[in-house]
Image (cartoon, rainbow, N blue to C red):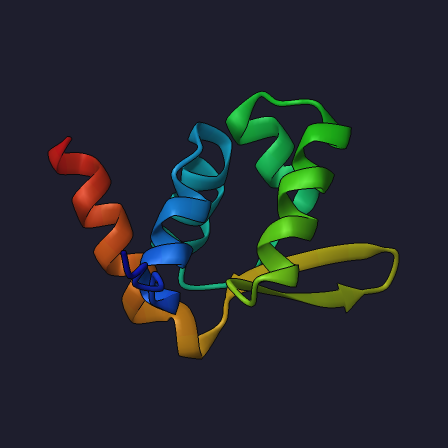
Length: 95
């Protein structure tokens, strides 16, 4: 019996299908500017530690980048993942 490997795009899709990750990506995708972490906490109504956890995992997988602005951190979708994020968010709306 042969096992086929799941391609990277499929792994990315499976990885982000979590309510908080999807909401973070949606907010970053919808905003044309970088988004401050404190604004995401207020908008998504989630705890700071939970946001930090999901931000770190999304950063580690290359979905978002972090820009330090003084003591604040701002986030945006990385250019190389922009199209896949668009496709993921479109798919999530269909389900």
